[in-house]
Amino acid sequence: MTSSPNELRTRFGTVYTAALTDVLDGLGHRHQTLPHEVVPLEPGARIAGRAFAVEGRKNHSIAPEASIRRILEMLGAVPAGHVAVYEPGDASCAHFGELSATSLQVHGVAGVVINGGCRDVDLIRKTGLPVFARYRTPQDAVSRWEVLEWGHEIEIEGVIVATGDYVVGDADGVAVIPRDLIETVLTEAEALVGTENLIRDAVRAGMKPLAAYEQFGKF
Image (cartoon, rainbow, N blue to C red; front, side, top):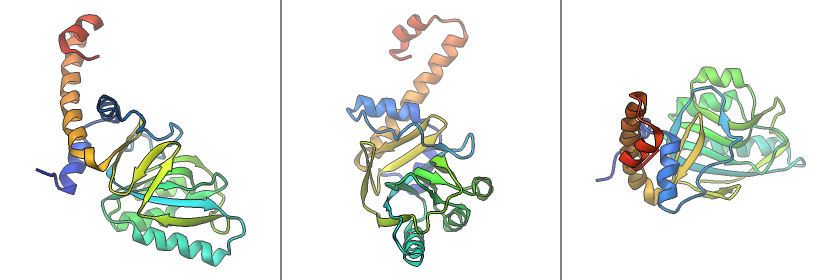
């Protein structure tokens, strides 16, 4: 039986990205982690939801009005419960700021992951919207950056992110689960977390690492 969106988010909230990527490795999907520079703006933040892909490019000749209208149109298209995942194709400016975060938070968006820049970091934190980004800069995107397309499929340094895939982020990084593997990966990750809890208890009780591995088949 397929889980509802709320059930998925609740269940994914109990597993960590390391368990998810271990399961993905076992299924032959060994390149599902976004660049390690993409980290949460707020220490301890977690993110989980279906991906909504956003693609852009550097464009320092675009008119300011055209630039801002395209950005705002895109922001208005992000569905509730989804994570906007940006491949901006640019490293010159901030592709996301506090007013954007406030709008997405009000409309129930689950979070934002950007292989690019943010500004207004302290104000974004106050919105409560989980945001993961590659860097921070006060430099505005308007007239420097152009949104090309959204709601499709993008590639971030070799990792394919399609709209409808599942995205989970924590202190270790961001994992992408292909849409046709969501239930399988989640179920196996939940089982793995249960096993690791048993191993943790055994090691705390004094069991040596190799003995724990031989008993549980995992370490």
